[in-house]
Amino acid sequence: MPRSYTAGDSPFDHVGGEDVVRRVVTRFYDHMDADEPALARLHEHDGQGHVSAEARERFARFLVEWLGGPAQYSPVHGHPRLRMRHAHLPIGMAMRDAWLRCMTRALDDVGVSGEVREFLDARFAEVAGFLRNVDGTG
Image (cartoon, rainbow, N blue to C red):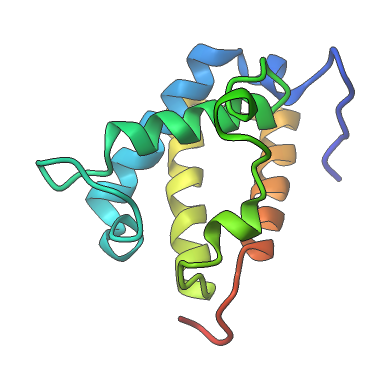
C-alpha cells in the first residue's frame, strides 16, 4: 500500500523538487503530442500543433503545488476545482487511460520510482477516475 505524506515530507520533496516535476510535465506532454492525439486535441495548441507552452506551464505550476511544493498555481489561477475546470471536456475511460499512459511514460522517462512512484501511480489513477464525466468507454 502506498505510504502517506505529511507537510515537510511531501511527494514534491521525494521526487526531487521542481526541476524533476517540470521534466515530468515536459515528457508527459511530449508523449501526449506523439502518442495520444485524441487527448492532445482536448488541450490548447501552439502554431506547430503541439500542446501550448501556456498549457504546459499551467499544469507544471499545478503539479508543483499539488505535490506539496511552493504555491505556484493557486496565486495565479485560484483554487484548482479540477472537476469544474474539466467539466466541459468529454472525459471517459479512453481519455482517462490515455492520460494515465502519458503520465506513466513520463514518470518512467524521468526515473521516478520507489515508494513515491507507488503513491503517485495510485493518486493519479484516483484523480483521473474522479474527473470522468462520460459513461462507457469514450
